[in-house]
Image (cartoon, rainbow, N blue to C red; front, side):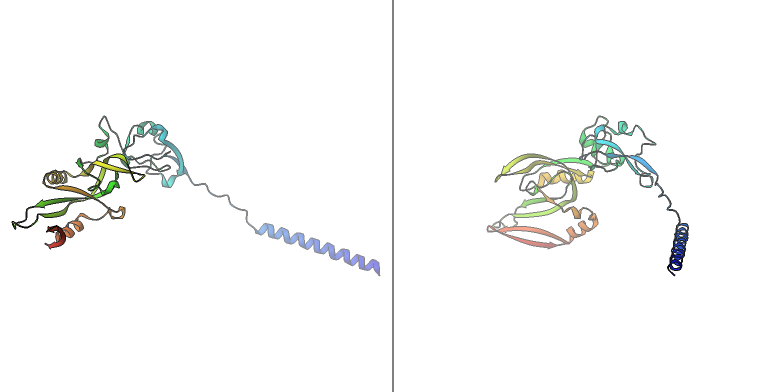
Length: 263
């Protein structure tokens, strides 16, 4: 009786082992083999190795080659087609700043060809004109190159009434103007170093340059710093707003009053 039970147990274990083996083989055959991940084609493009500031001459050590996906580097300077690009671009002047790792776009570079820095970074058809400012007329020293400003002309006129005080009138003559450079010197005020400019250089169209030149002879110029989010305001909207209303400061008997003249 004991021998029979042992034989039955051995047969059962053998059958179970065979079944498990067959099942595992079936599972292994049913699972497809993992396919290798396809490698995306890449190219080496030219990027800024370090930050390059506005107006800074580009040096060979400021540039390096970096691997990019081929689909994203089609319109950039790549090593396959321009192996000597670093030598060709070295010596150019940055018309706009680059940050480290940013692809080099030649639209943001210009060859000086012996000209000065300012002539090199000026866009086609634009002019650079300078005017004097003071802390009171230059936003307290917070205006920096590449900021956008409005130019305000203030004029003092004689009051038609003989006994009345002079009338001070202010208006925006130029709007959304880019600052190219500003003559700045460190000045310590209350233990804090601030930057105070005396001369600002603005980027203007020829007709705007004429307007500024005439305004310098007729009154006091002030700069109003614009928000960075307000750079794309249209000229038409600014002109219409200026025509709708004009703020006038009138001083009578030592008291300043602000009135709005409708046009």
